[in-house]
Image (cartoon, rainbow, N blue to C red; front, side, top):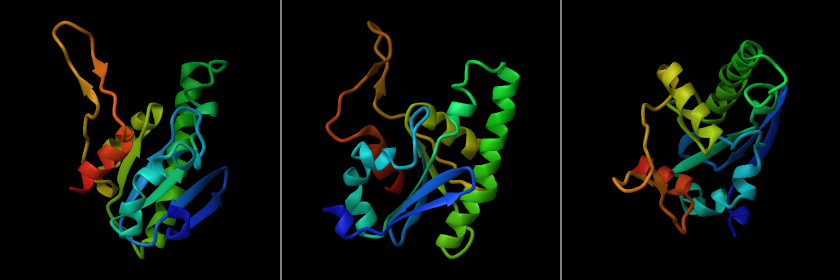
Length: 170
């Protein structure tokens, strides 16, 4: 079992939390699905799916809480207020989570971003808006286009985010 081999730390960084997995490797900032929590990646089997990468020191995962409940998913607020609140969430990532990751890695380093669902939006948005600190890699995974059908997701036994992570490291 992975938990016997992999370091796992949970830290609260002000208004939200971060769960770190691994002792060495390329840092990967993981965003959960809409309104998700930092431990969702583990609870949904994703940490198990890449346990060999974590254990071999190829990757370190840094899973953060989502800010969606107060931002994009909060339909009771006008869009302008949701956008302003998203700015606060992004500021938390850049001013609290990223420096914590840098300290854990022994100094500033390029960070890969990864996410599922709305978390994929956060991963891509952050990497594009702050390219100086994040790996400029984007991949489209698990989706194909057919002339006869709309876009269709391919079923896979390995979770798509795990496949994406393995391809990113290749």
